[in-house]
Each structure stands twice: as structure tokens, then as C-alpha cells.
Image 1 (cartoon, rainbow, N blue to C red):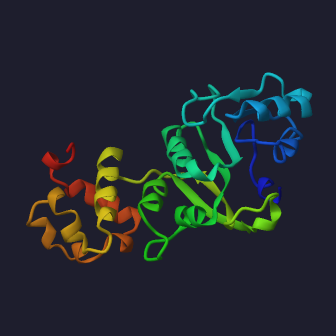
Image 2: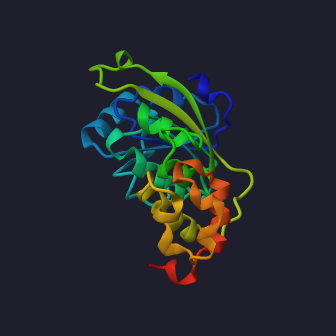
Image 3: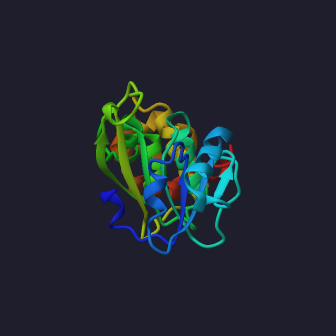
Length: 234
């Protein structure tokens, strides 16, 4: 719970409360306006029985399908289901203007990938798609022994804080197109991976000698202004 101390919460959504191990502490935060989203009907019933004050604050359904839970801005916290954790992050991106901060537990590999820096083995398409909008910090490992029954994988907790300055790109759609195309063939030089998006003359630039994993998000954003217009909507 120490990771919560540096954040201030008004509206807070917990994703996947399960048995309520985290919910128990969240409900004690002063002046919090709390909601939780839980898909499992039995777990919803258990939460109602265990925490009478949670009545009216649980949304039964999938986080990937529910409408935005607050009209105002809200933070998100949760032990995210590992099988959809990346999809959860991209759903958060859909709401990024309303979500200033996120604290989440993921499978360690996914958490490390989100927080990875350019040039590292873990840096990839997920890193490059999320980092323009959120500053991500890897906070700590969570070993399997912390759970019952213990999972077969290590877990990791990260924080996501919405970036204070927006990255200058031609459009988010163009940026996503470039990043996904570049990492689709990450072992190739960028020149070969993204050839269909740029005129041959532009591909002579030395930056195209690099591979996708060597480019930071600012470099990707700058390249969007050089993409061929006819390639952007393909």
C-alpha cells in the first residue's frame, strides 16, 4: 500500500477486486469516491457480503466493455487479470484524457515491457504506444508466494502518470500506424520494415539504418510528419 501514498485520489475505479484484498484498504481512503468493476457474479456477491458499505459501488461486467464509470476524471487501480492486462492498458488509453494516474499489478514480463526504455530487450510496440501518453515507473516485484494458490509467474507493479506535455506528432492514428508497422519486423532495419510508408528519397536518411527497438517515442513522433499521405489510411 506504500505505493498509494504519493497519489491523491478523488474518484477511484478498482479493476478486478476479486475477493477484496485490495478493496479493504481502498475503502478506508478518506473522502474517496470509489467504484469497482468485477465480472464474476459470485465475487460480486462476496464483496457485498464482506463490505456492506460497497453497496451501489460495484459495476458487474467486463472492464473492456463498460462505459466510462465517472463523468469527472478518475484514477484506476487493480490486480489486473493477466490474460487481458495489455487490453486493459489500451482501454485506459481510450480514456486517457480522463485518467491521470494508474497503479496496476501485471505479469512481470508485461509490466517490464510497458516501462522499458528504447534499446532494451523488453522495449517493443506496447512500450512505444503507451509511453507518449503516460510516464511509467516499475515499482516492485511481487513473488508467487504472495498469492494462494501461487501462480507460476512473477508479478510486477507499475505506476502510470499521465504525461504533462503532449508529444508532437502528426496524429495519433499516424503514430500508431508507424509504430505497429516498424515493430512488425523488428529485426529488420527500419528502412525495410516501413518502406511502404515513406518515399524512397526519405528512406535514405540515416535514421532508417536503425531497428525499431532503437528509436525512442520522440523519434517515432517526428517521423510521422514525413510519412506518405497515401500510406496512412491503409
